[in-house]
Image (cartoon, rainbow, N blue to C red; front, side, top):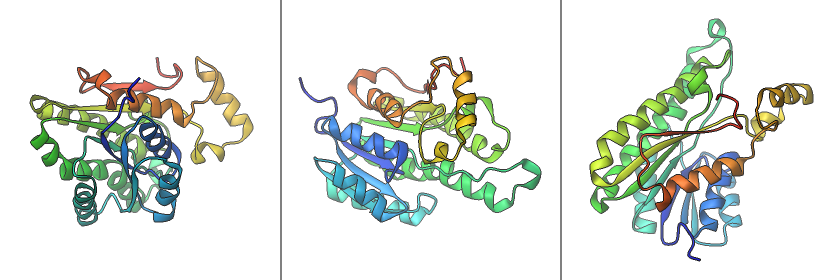
Length: 245
């Protein structure tokens, strides 16, 4: 059986750890060549070392337009094309609205939302020329429901959903799809800081009774990136164990 991503070139931002790393490994395992992008070169190089196939590491601040432009040019030079873009890079700066600083707001919106805009804009032209492409944005259930203490994060993730739908409408006629994945509570570095009691309380709210794994999100991305989802665009795939149903 042929691998689902054989011959495809994928760009994954925030590929140095957590969900982004899981996505890079999953797609590479299905035959994709992967450009692993992240702020910390050592982290993305670690991901590349775990990939048996073709992969390269790129250090980039996704919120810096000049860095993103230069990185995307280098990726196109190195791989010749890009078939799939996964905008996964994200940060949190949680705090109550009344105490949130301007910089905490700007950092989250610039990384989570502007970063996706910059990468999408930089790679769209090449996708238009080849009349095919997949754009997958990693949103969050916080972008669907809001979350106290995360007004900046929720705003950025809700913005990603609106961005996804707009891009889907603009690019559909050229064979390019754009979709979002909205993870629920996933076991990552962010959830490790929660106490056992808090994690147990979370599980009680989830229909399936467990936190998700990064691989659960990677599998959803694989579906949207593959030919199986060729007739799916402008959608939000919620992967949360039934938390928000």
